[in-house]
Image (cartoon, rainbow over all chains, first blue to last red; front, side):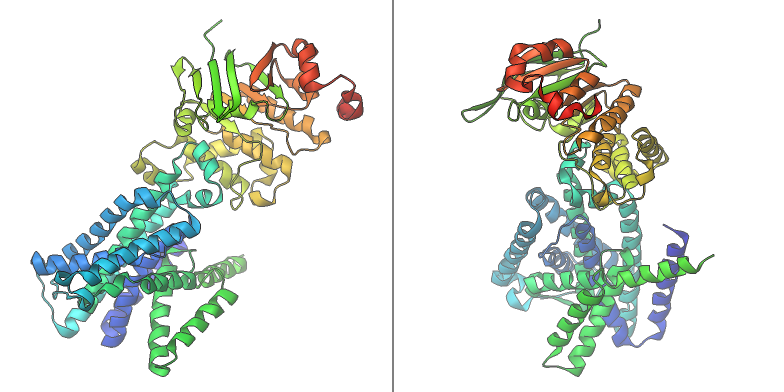
Length: 316
Length: 263
């Protein structure tokens, strides 16, 4: 990572941490959900760079959420770190298995197959009484390595948990992007034949990306479940997946930080739109996406890059 | 004379009722430069595709450095030391020339495990150094920072062949290195390619339609017709073969019409 980027990322993290002590609870709650969803978006960016768009990321998001609800309820586990870890790993495990199928498909076929798989989970959850059917399940109140906060303190504690997990994920994904396996995303998108004949397995590269993105989505779903205190089958519905793709377009695939900035922007716009125009908020949200595509085709992230270049140009 | 680097026995490939290749038996000693000629559909590309593992032969065996590589997957064959370039240059259009070469160099030297791929950086010192050397070797260093999508055709071909040479293969198969190149440029391009390959002392097999280029650069010629090798020998002798003249190259007068420019 370039030194400037490191300073920017560090100060963004510090600002977000300080904000946790200063801002009102409703903003903290909004940011918690936004950053948890940002993890899912980060996972979509991992695939996006290789030219793949998943319209079924809600599958892993939902798996992560339900894993937390179920082991909290049946296994009696309350530690938030453990719950989140299990949520992420269960989604990653599922994607490892279905990855053998999915890694063979590209473009619209990949998008639709992943959508279909997420709708299968939706259908199963809706039909299963013991998993709460359409009502879903409540999630236990988590503890943090023995610390058991309540109400306002719980909100702040969850916010810091999300912040730490997101920062860790951002660092690891950033390192992945600079590694050979991560950097080959663009070659894979450009010319799979050439990558194969240079001696690298394209399906293995893509399979790895699927598992990484599912791990991120499952972790995001687990954190969201803890933050909301409830899971239901809508977490796996296709509109949820669509929302994540929406945020990815808004954010742009240019950088790791864009996922979180984009997700925060999306949640804010949605909250304000919902407060101002309760009947028409979707129109406002749609307009924002339209404006983004027209004027910032590389997403919000490209604004940061433009600032960057502006600074370099001025430097002597 | 040491044992051949490549030895092909009775190789055949059938697509339904069509024989794309049959009874091909060829043995190539190390460091030889072999030209492959033949009309379209004669089985030249099928031959290359079988050696590189892109197509699975229906019959026969292929040995490379004494080891049986018949029907191995292309990645494994590449790892053993056989590389190829393509008739239509296969490059990464949204990367720069340097990044293309870096990717090729990095893949060439990457460990074969998943953990290895995640832990290897794209731009390690070694792969950057190899990429720079290859850019110099193929005389495309001036294009270093151009996007590959914007390159002229000749530079694309050089980049494609340069990428194939990353990772130090011992046998390089060039499928029509001069296709899509104007007649005036062909000779210069082959000159750059061949002197680069000679300096690496590797065995080369190249497919070519221009008989002047065959005469200029090949030490030996394989003539393909209808899926099999009809003549094999020194260029002058092979090109003088009456069957080759009737079926492939045509009578000598064509050189006066089209390809006389650089004679």
